[in-house]
Length: 173
Image 1: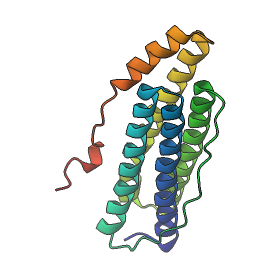
Image 2 (image 1 turned 180 degrees about the vertical axis):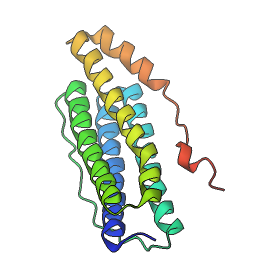
Image 3 (image 1 turned 90 degrees about the vertical axis):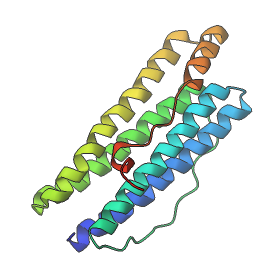
Image 4 (image 1 turned 30 degrees about the vertical axis):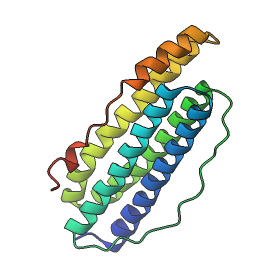
């Protein structure tokens, strides 16, 4: 059974994951208006992934016999200056999420909650991937500078991203 402190912190993480989904939907909307459907698609998939992360935490709380206390979800920003700006903000946001998950892990270690430590391992690895993806796209966007051709090539690449149900949810009926 989770301690009250850890249950409260995980509930807070669910709210953060829901905010992440909102943020990526806002970014998808920006890309739609900018007529970059591949970028918009990538962000939609990202929003779905973040919603799944919230569900992973929710399911863990349920498995531990804990009730989730839901927090308010702030409105995300909706103004961005460029695709590069969007992905710089994406990376900054993912670093905040990583720090938050590390905080959960620190609590679990301090409480010798081995089940929660094991549970968080996958999410920690997932954050490495999230930051890498954003960093890679920043690098590509930075290299093309203001090249329309380069931007449309990246847009086509991002349109191919597929949504894959995260590993911890693949066994959920």
